[in-house]
Length: 307
Image (cartoon, rainbow, N blue to C red):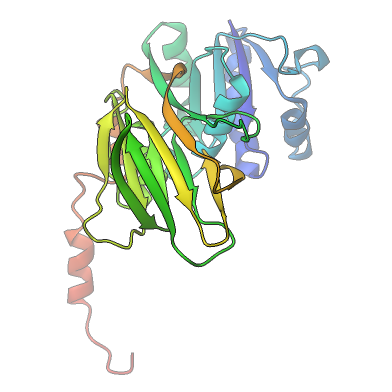
């Protein structure tokens, strides 16, 4: 078995979780690959990984393969890891060292259990769809795919932008708003959730269109079939707008038309058979928790007139 390991190089707790992960993988004779920069980060945090990873195990993005990819950090790190894997179709496992972590949903303290489940085949590989951005002029840079969302927002102006929107060549509406999100079901618990979008289970075949701070109260999130093609034309007071694919920004001129649809590419993620998406809602969003005991304490506290 061979595993590639990616990680966030901005948080020291990532080094601790990664050290525990590598010790556990080594005990099961798993060969490990990683980026040189991440290796140096671990070393600078006081962990000598040279007994697990040598110079020949540094990846250069041209010629490597693995059975699994471990990503240690938060959901942002997971998404960047997916972009680095490209079309290699290596199943990804997210180890949470961040805050919420819907994609990195494995607790760092359960590494041993996770590896035991992997080696015994107690897991399911889920294929998550990507959105693909296309433009006639091909003005985007780098990786024109998004696992979570494509965000179209205003740039260098406080004024609203107008986003003319068509679905399968049928006119939908013109959004006057701070922006517009085109989100996958995976992205429904990311940016989309923060602006009032619905939560979708990862295997639901749909795309969410959700305005950001719309000027009309009647404009609501819309879920369309995942086979749909979305076309956008933006009007902005400064003649520019910002487009971000999973947070990777590009500035476009308003003359550029956008086409967004589901890609044939997918990102493979690993779900342990002992867990379910509902478990994530319980642990991350506290669904089913009774908070009345905390509220009651507030009511029972005596009032201090000096407060």
